[in-house]
Image (cartoon, rainbow, N blue to C red):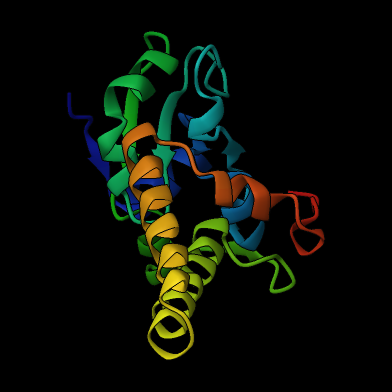
Length: 176
């Protein structure tokens, strides 16, 4: 299923005139760093059973960072809109920013969890590969373990390392 898209300018106009509401489907850690003022948080991880924000007479404009996640989840998002028009912000938050429209940001917000996972996983793979080559071949198991974890995450859609990193003190909850 595909949903119609709106340009950032058209979405801003619809928000100003009250005919639409904006729903941000990104997770809390992403939203903490930058968000469109007035958008409602409706993360994909909590979408099941959730109702879209706004009034029954308003269209729901969904957005993510680039528009890709929103398009990939169009059917679920349309269901959340519960019979109201469901639209996608073309290009997501990046296009909104590029259009010069207002964004709230917090430079103190933590780095997105998936970037943290990439840094830690990549570092452990390099450590295992170099350690196995320079010190002891058994250290290659570190790289194999991380690789297996990444495959498991891809297949199941879960990420144990991301969950663990999310509990670290530097990822403490901040107001949205």
